[in-house]
Length: 85
Length: 129
Image (cartoon, rainbow over all chains, first blue to last red; front, side):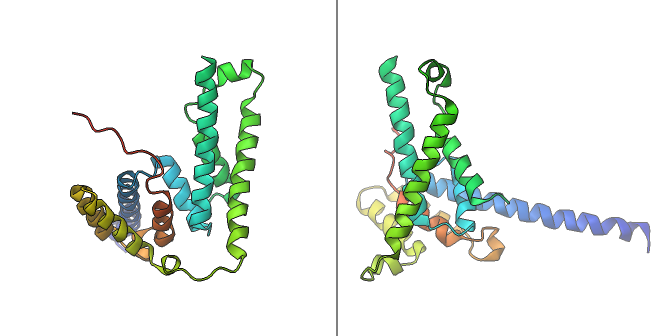
């Protein structure tokens, strides 16, 4: 086997991985833009966690209730903070 | 990959972004106490919804509508409510989203369903003049 052939194999794997990563990021960016258009209130990080929770089999409707509940709780915290200022 | 517990914990932590802890510590409320309370609320909401789903319900056409079609219904609503550019962009983005293993997203349908459920849950950003 020539040195060129030996060096090409890892490069091809890297290219494949880069391509997959690029595709993955592209899809996440599309989802984030859809999310913003729909005024869901999800930031990039929350959306990314939600995608992973959906991949773990969490029911999306139940997950939306969790997010709304957390939003309520954090809004209450921020409201008490403002009232004590 | 992370477990469901870790991911829910991360979601709770992320929802606390912007909360000032210095003043809270003085008031006797610890960050850890708030995190615990939030986790408990998150699990409460999750389980309540899951148990509610096990009760028999008459099938609704919306329950069986694919999430992409629900998105198209939202797009239609945007169009008739005078936001044609947003509707156009939404349809364009949906077209670009690929389905199946090639997309790099294993549960695209579930994610779209989640976005449908959260649609309009926060006010639209104020447009600048």
